[in-house]
Length: 231
Image (cartoon, rainbow, N blue to C red; front, side, top):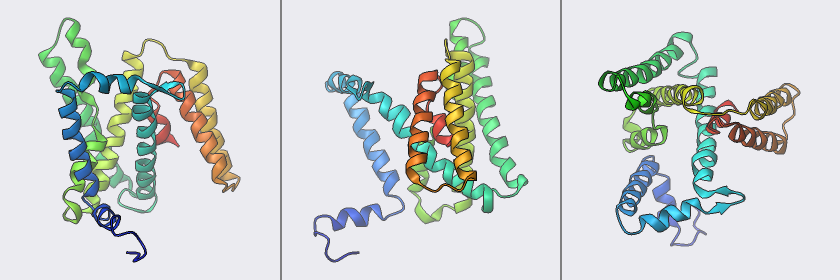
Protein backbone atom coordinates (compact mmCIF):
# COMPACT_ATOMS: atom_id res chain seq x y z
CA UNK A 1 0.00 0.00 0.00
CA UNK A 2 1.24 3.48 -0.86
CA UNK A 3 2.63 5.10 2.34
CA UNK A 4 1.77 8.54 0.94
CA UNK A 5 -1.94 7.84 1.17
CA UNK A 6 -3.83 9.65 3.97
CA UNK A 7 -4.25 7.42 7.07
CA UNK A 8 -8.05 7.75 6.90
CA UNK A 9 -8.15 6.17 3.43
CA UNK A 10 -5.95 3.15 4.16
CA UNK A 11 -8.57 1.11 6.11
CA UNK A 12 -11.04 1.53 3.24
CA UNK A 13 -8.43 0.38 0.71
CA UNK A 14 -7.57 -2.64 2.85
CA UNK A 15 -11.26 -3.48 3.11
CA UNK A 16 -11.93 -3.28 -0.63
CA UNK A 17 -8.86 -5.40 -1.34
CA UNK A 18 -10.66 -8.25 0.43
CA UNK A 19 -12.31 -10.72 -1.91
CA UNK A 20 -15.46 -10.69 0.21
CA UNK A 21 -15.75 -6.86 0.21
CA UNK A 22 -18.35 -6.66 -2.57
CA UNK A 23 -20.56 -9.24 -0.86
CA UNK A 24 -20.36 -7.45 2.48
CA UNK A 25 -21.29 -4.12 0.88
CA UNK A 26 -24.16 -5.80 -1.00
CA UNK A 27 -25.63 -7.32 2.18
CA UNK A 28 -25.22 -4.05 4.09
CA UNK A 29 -26.98 -2.07 1.33
CA UNK A 30 -29.73 -4.69 1.16
CA UNK A 31 -30.43 -4.33 4.88
CA UNK A 32 -30.49 -0.53 4.56
CA UNK A 33 -32.86 -0.75 1.57
CA UNK A 34 -35.22 -3.11 3.42
CA UNK A 35 -35.23 -0.78 6.42
CA UNK A 36 -36.03 2.24 4.23
CA UNK A 37 -38.78 0.37 2.38
CA UNK A 38 -40.46 -0.50 5.69
CA UNK A 39 -40.03 2.87 7.38
CA UNK A 40 -41.41 6.37 6.97
CA UNK A 41 -38.58 7.09 4.54
CA UNK A 42 -40.06 4.91 1.80
CA UNK A 43 -42.14 7.74 0.29
CA UNK A 44 -39.28 10.27 -0.09
CA UNK A 45 -36.99 7.44 -1.22
CA UNK A 46 -39.46 6.46 -3.95
CA UNK A 47 -39.80 10.11 -4.94
CA UNK A 48 -36.00 10.36 -5.18
CA UNK A 49 -35.89 7.39 -7.55
CA UNK A 50 -38.48 9.07 -9.75
CA UNK A 51 -36.46 12.29 -9.99
CA UNK A 52 -35.20 12.87 -13.51
CA UNK A 53 -31.48 13.09 -14.25
CA UNK A 54 -30.48 13.84 -17.85
CA UNK A 55 -34.07 13.31 -19.06
CA UNK A 56 -34.43 9.88 -17.44
CA UNK A 57 -35.62 8.83 -13.94
CA UNK A 58 -32.88 7.90 -11.48
CA UNK A 59 -34.20 4.35 -11.04
CA UNK A 60 -33.87 3.81 -14.79
CA UNK A 61 -30.21 4.83 -14.72
CA UNK A 62 -29.70 2.23 -11.99
CA UNK A 63 -31.77 -0.62 -13.47
CA UNK A 64 -30.89 -0.12 -17.13
CA UNK A 65 -27.66 1.89 -16.99
CA UNK A 66 -25.50 0.60 -14.14
CA UNK A 67 -26.79 -2.95 -14.61
CA UNK A 68 -25.81 -2.77 -18.29
CA UNK A 69 -22.25 -1.90 -17.21
CA UNK A 70 -22.34 -4.77 -14.71
CA UNK A 71 -23.47 -7.20 -17.42
CA UNK A 72 -20.78 -5.83 -19.73
CA UNK A 73 -18.06 -6.65 -17.17
CA UNK A 74 -19.50 -10.10 -16.50
CA UNK A 75 -19.83 -10.72 -20.23
CA UNK A 76 -16.15 -9.87 -20.72
CA UNK A 77 -15.19 -12.42 -18.06
CA UNK A 78 -17.32 -15.09 -19.73
CA UNK A 79 -15.83 -14.23 -23.13
CA UNK A 80 -12.32 -14.74 -21.72
CA UNK A 81 -13.29 -18.08 -20.21
CA UNK A 82 -14.89 -19.21 -23.48
CA UNK A 83 -11.73 -18.31 -25.38
CA UNK A 84 -9.10 -19.95 -23.17
CA UNK A 85 -10.49 -20.77 -19.76
CA UNK A 86 -12.96 -22.89 -17.85
CA UNK A 87 -15.54 -22.81 -20.67
CA UNK A 88 -13.20 -23.28 -23.63
CA UNK A 89 -14.49 -26.74 -24.56
CA UNK A 90 -18.05 -27.37 -25.84
CA UNK A 91 -18.63 -29.89 -23.05
CA UNK A 92 -17.67 -27.37 -20.36
CA UNK A 93 -19.75 -24.61 -21.93
CA UNK A 94 -22.80 -26.86 -22.28
CA UNK A 95 -23.13 -27.46 -18.52
CA UNK A 96 -24.07 -23.89 -17.46
CA UNK A 97 -26.24 -23.59 -20.58
CA UNK A 98 -28.28 -26.68 -19.66
CA UNK A 99 -28.38 -25.61 -16.01
CA UNK A 100 -29.72 -22.20 -17.04
CA UNK A 101 -32.42 -23.79 -19.19
CA UNK A 102 -33.45 -25.93 -16.24
CA UNK A 103 -33.37 -22.85 -14.02
CA UNK A 104 -35.87 -21.16 -16.32
CA UNK A 105 -38.18 -24.05 -17.23
CA UNK A 106 -38.56 -25.66 -13.78
CA UNK A 107 -39.54 -22.48 -11.82
CA UNK A 108 -41.97 -21.49 -14.58
CA UNK A 109 -43.49 -25.00 -14.55
CA UNK A 110 -43.86 -24.97 -10.76
CA UNK A 111 -45.53 -21.56 -10.89
CA UNK A 112 -47.90 -22.69 -13.64
CA UNK A 113 -48.71 -25.87 -11.69
CA UNK A 114 -50.03 -23.83 -8.77
CA UNK A 115 -51.60 -21.14 -10.98
CA UNK A 116 -53.01 -23.00 -14.00
CA UNK A 117 -55.96 -20.70 -14.70
CA UNK A 118 -57.03 -17.10 -14.25
CA UNK A 119 -55.08 -13.88 -14.51
CA UNK A 120 -52.42 -15.18 -12.10
CA UNK A 121 -51.37 -17.79 -14.66
CA UNK A 122 -49.86 -14.99 -16.78
CA UNK A 123 -47.12 -14.51 -14.18
CA UNK A 124 -45.25 -17.71 -15.10
CA UNK A 125 -42.29 -15.67 -16.37
CA UNK A 126 -41.71 -13.94 -13.02
CA UNK A 127 -39.65 -16.69 -11.31
CA UNK A 128 -37.48 -17.38 -14.36
CA UNK A 129 -34.76 -14.76 -13.82
CA UNK A 130 -31.67 -15.18 -11.64
CA UNK A 131 -30.49 -12.17 -9.64
CA UNK A 132 -26.90 -12.34 -10.84
CA UNK A 133 -25.72 -9.41 -8.70
CA UNK A 134 -26.93 -11.10 -5.51
CA UNK A 135 -25.66 -14.51 -6.61
CA UNK A 136 -22.15 -13.20 -7.27
CA UNK A 137 -22.19 -11.03 -4.14
CA UNK A 138 -23.15 -13.90 -1.85
CA UNK A 139 -20.59 -16.18 -3.47
CA UNK A 140 -17.86 -13.58 -2.93
CA UNK A 141 -18.49 -13.74 0.84
CA UNK A 142 -16.71 -17.09 0.87
CA UNK A 143 -13.61 -15.58 -0.77
CA UNK A 144 -10.93 -17.96 -1.99
CA UNK A 145 -12.70 -20.95 -0.43
CA UNK A 146 -14.96 -21.02 -3.51
CA UNK A 147 -13.29 -22.65 -6.55
CA UNK A 148 -12.80 -20.32 -9.50
CA UNK A 149 -14.54 -22.83 -11.78
CA UNK A 150 -17.69 -22.55 -9.63
CA UNK A 151 -17.68 -18.76 -9.96
CA UNK A 152 -17.36 -19.01 -13.75
CA UNK A 153 -20.15 -21.60 -13.84
CA UNK A 154 -22.44 -19.31 -11.82
CA UNK A 155 -21.67 -16.27 -13.99
CA UNK A 156 -22.34 -18.20 -17.21
CA UNK A 157 -25.52 -19.74 -15.83
CA UNK A 158 -26.83 -16.38 -14.61
CA UNK A 159 -26.11 -14.61 -17.90
CA UNK A 160 -27.89 -17.27 -20.00
CA UNK A 161 -30.75 -17.36 -17.50
CA UNK A 162 -31.17 -13.57 -17.53
CA UNK A 163 -30.96 -13.42 -21.33
CA UNK A 164 -33.70 -16.04 -21.53
CA UNK A 165 -35.83 -14.17 -19.00
CA UNK A 166 -35.42 -10.88 -20.88
CA UNK A 167 -36.36 -12.64 -24.12
CA UNK A 168 -39.51 -14.02 -22.47
CA UNK A 169 -40.41 -10.55 -21.17
CA UNK A 170 -39.86 -9.05 -24.63
CA UNK A 171 -42.00 -11.69 -26.36
CA UNK A 172 -44.81 -12.22 -23.85
CA UNK A 173 -44.97 -9.20 -21.54
CA UNK A 174 -43.94 -6.18 -23.64
CA UNK A 175 -46.92 -4.60 -25.34
CA UNK A 176 -44.95 -2.66 -27.93
CA UNK A 177 -41.41 -3.09 -29.30
CA UNK A 178 -39.90 -0.54 -31.64
CA UNK A 179 -38.37 -2.43 -34.54
CA UNK A 180 -36.59 0.69 -35.79
CA UNK A 181 -34.87 1.32 -32.45
CA UNK A 182 -33.97 -2.36 -32.08
CA UNK A 183 -32.54 -2.36 -35.61
CA UNK A 184 -30.50 0.76 -34.83
CA UNK A 185 -29.08 -0.94 -31.73
CA UNK A 186 -28.05 -3.96 -33.82
CA UNK A 187 -26.40 -1.68 -36.40
CA UNK A 188 -24.33 -0.03 -33.67
CA UNK A 189 -23.33 -3.47 -32.35
CA UNK A 190 -22.28 -4.59 -35.83
CA UNK A 191 -20.27 -1.37 -36.16
CA UNK A 192 -18.35 -2.30 -33.00
CA UNK A 193 -17.51 -5.70 -34.51
CA UNK A 194 -16.35 -4.07 -37.75
CA UNK A 195 -14.09 -1.69 -35.82
CA UNK A 196 -12.50 -4.69 -34.10
CA UNK A 197 -11.87 -6.43 -37.42
CA UNK A 198 -10.42 -3.19 -38.80
CA UNK A 199 -7.92 -3.14 -35.94
CA UNK A 200 -9.10 0.19 -34.50
CA UNK A 201 -8.11 0.38 -30.83
CA UNK A 202 -9.31 3.89 -29.94
CA UNK A 203 -11.56 3.47 -26.88
CA UNK A 204 -13.65 6.55 -27.58
CA UNK A 205 -15.16 4.96 -30.71
CA UNK A 206 -16.28 1.91 -28.74
CA UNK A 207 -17.64 4.02 -25.87
CA UNK A 208 -19.73 6.16 -28.24
CA UNK A 209 -21.06 3.20 -30.24
CA UNK A 210 -21.74 1.25 -27.04
CA UNK A 211 -23.68 4.16 -25.54
CA UNK A 212 -25.68 4.59 -28.75
CA UNK A 213 -26.47 0.87 -28.86
CA UNK A 214 -27.61 1.01 -25.21
CA UNK A 215 -29.81 4.06 -25.83
CA UNK A 216 -31.40 2.48 -28.91
CA UNK A 217 -32.01 -0.79 -27.04
CA UNK A 218 -33.65 1.17 -24.22
CA UNK A 219 -35.84 3.02 -26.71
CA UNK A 220 -36.87 -0.24 -28.37
CA UNK A 221 -38.65 -1.53 -25.26
CA UNK A 222 -36.23 -4.45 -24.75
CA UNK A 223 -34.33 -4.40 -21.46
CA UNK A 224 -31.19 -2.36 -22.08
CA UNK A 225 -28.94 -4.70 -20.07
CA UNK A 226 -28.97 -6.93 -23.17
CA UNK A 227 -26.79 -4.31 -24.86
CA UNK A 228 -24.24 -4.66 -22.05
CA UNK A 229 -23.99 -8.41 -22.61
CA UNK A 230 -23.80 -8.19 -26.41
CA UNK A 231 -21.17 -5.45 -26.40
